Amino acid sequence: MSDDVYQDARARVERIAKEAEVAPEVIDALMQPKAVLTADIPVRMDDGSTEHFVAYRCRYNDALGPTKGGIRFHPGVSLEEVKALALWMTIKCAVVGIPYGGGKGGVIVDPKQLSRLELERLSRGYMRAMADFVGPDTDIPAPDVYTNARIMGWMADEYETIHRRKSPAVITGKPIPHGGSLGRDEATGRGAFIVIQEYAQRRDIDPKETTVAVQGLGNAGYHVARLLQKEGYKIVAVSDSKGGIHSEDGFDVESLYQHKQDTRKLEGVYCEGSVCEMIESKSISNEELLELDVDLLIPAALEGVINEGNAKNIRAKVIAEVANGPIEGNADQILLDAGVEVLPDVLTNAGGVTVSYFEWVQNRQGYPWSLEKVRERLEDELSTAFADMWKIYEEKNVPLRAAAYTSALERIGEAIELQGTQAWFSDGK
Ligand code: NAD
Picture 1 (tube, rainbow, N blue to C red):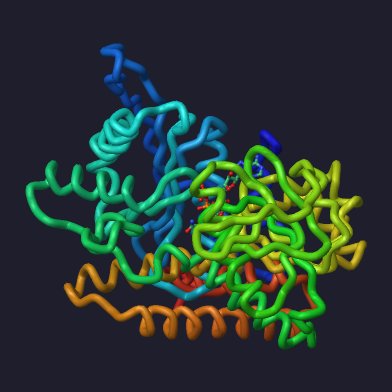
Picture 2: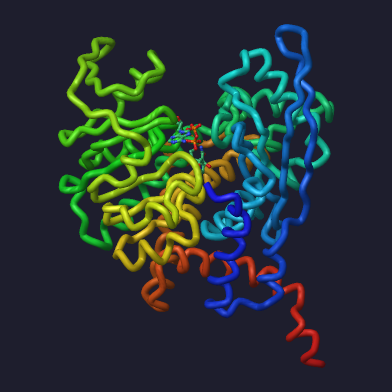
């Protein structure tokens, strides 16, 4: 991953905004975050010692509503990364037209090294540090890499303890009994599936003739792979942080995932009930997975995995960015020249924030929705956002990423311009 992930994110916004002739005030407003909080979280470890963890929260831009974005627990977290992710959230919320700005948070930690009690203390410590910075009307966190529903539940509980009232809308992605939404766990993967299907229809792609490689079989990667396989796509390669496996015959995603949950190992298996049989597959590295000759490549782990160094080796025809920022800015042109079409992250993985928005709405209404309603509305939101992007793509003849950004920048731009621009004030009337 590039050290300049934030500079890269800003440069991409600036370039696309200038091409789309967005007002200078709008570009200026998006070139720095509104507010950033850095905190030290002291955590009592199980052996009685105290360890200190660095934590961040960034509210990037709130022109369209309170800021919204996940919290990442990962050793590679940095302030630059958090700001980049918060900027992408700003664009993403606007792409799907939900009334939010963008935010993000993170802690520099390897959560796999913590006991369950240490993880709870860290999660509650994060919320104690951020309790005045977040809130249902200001900034609403959610899960991201290596954080999950249980962690969101602890954080919501800590916020409610501090503020001495129930306030489930402060955070989304909670367990269902704590005010979580049905369908939130699968939302990012389902959203990506909807986007891929919208694309496949427009490009006449037959799922049964389409091979897929998925990097990162986590929450987002698992659900998109599972839904694609159900539709007939052949999932020929998957990976996790330790490496990947490849089989020309394709994998049964459900079997792989259940086996990984039980054994913590990613292995080629086919399971019926609790009985699993090994199937032939080849071990590959995460780098090799990206360069496989497949029809559809789905990076669903971390950012910056496709960059100037390996972009020319990509053989997939289409990349669906399920991770945030898996393709660095300097690889965009290389892929474009090679005819690789990219379904951009700001739309492809927007299912998560869309159902987070539904969760927030349900919490505020005190009225939970059925799973059918969540899925139906998710499909509506994402197919509309896809159609908006496609219209710009056809009218302006720009890559899909530029089309999605343009759609978002027009929405953010309108909100900022309605407060008055230099052109408007100096018009003199
Ligand atoms: P997760 O923690 O559930 O899964 C991450 C997966 O990536 C795991 O399988 C892990 O083993 C794998 N991984 C970690 N490091 C890796 C590496 N170096 N190489 C290959 N694989 C590696 O996380 P998630 O929630 O599925 O998030 C994955 C991506 O999707 C992130 O970029 C995240 O920002 C993005 N995303 C997630 C959501 C969501 O709702 N969960 C929403 C939008 C975007």
